[in-house]
Image (cartoon, rainbow, N blue to C red):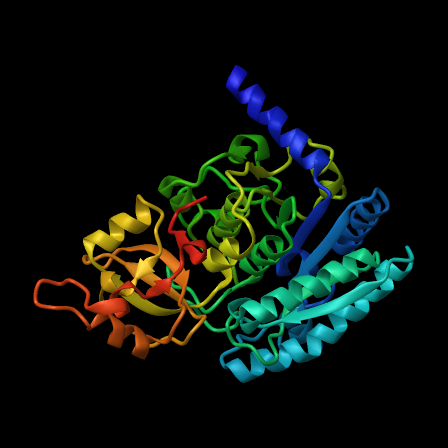
Length: 401
């Protein structure tokens, strides 16, 4: 009981103190059954964001709903979108409607907004990632509310069907997008608003059918300090109207935790959900942070597209994992896929298990040439063998926090 009180107090302390917030609203919150904007759900969220900003907090809003609004406008809300081009057309129509709605709602409170449309390349390229961070920082400094969405009209990463357990270049849903934005900005808290109360105690696949008006206290897991395989099993199954599901929200929360932030999954249909969350009340499921992973290391671990795969020997494995050393050409067994200088590569052991990621100093062709200069006993010949492929400050161990 004492330990529980301690973690509850930690939750309250962190959420009350959070100054920079990323808030994500899902399609099921933004749109109604006929593909229209659900003003009865969106307006309370807008008012809460205004109060948070007027209270001195910086807010970034990640909003789904463009495809849903576009479907409604085009009369396709009752039809199954069977091809990518139609889905992108809906996004093109709906994004304008979405921003127009937000402009009208926030202008009543004299809040300026900015549209920020992103693609996966904004996260997989370090320079673009840095530029994005600076731009949003500047908007926040001006007191503007950035409203973020994937640029679905030109990007297919979020719209295409993704097999369970696989991952597109950077993100495959706005939950992960919100977590990556939080990571890039070093935000204090991530809130994912959905149509259920939080992470529910349910059998796999049952979550999507749970009613938000059911036995909320009994069904909701209030606090998580570690993501386990059992929790991921609970989260299995897609949501009813959004493209993501509880599993993608759990993955987003895990990114937030590993970046030193606090995450909350909560029902976005309540009138004062956000206000209660940042007063430290027990709303939804809160995820307490682990150690903070900083700067470029967060980008290597989460945002970057892994372009290459390098197999290393046992000596290199020990040097990287135990001695915190760089990866030398002498430790490379083979190169399994092409990469260019400054690409992020996956570093795996001889059994094929990934244990680290890092930024390559040279292209795969040069790495192959360097690693091939060994004598029959495996000893490196000359300076080539000691050439650094990945420097230690650009290496992140998988699972490191």
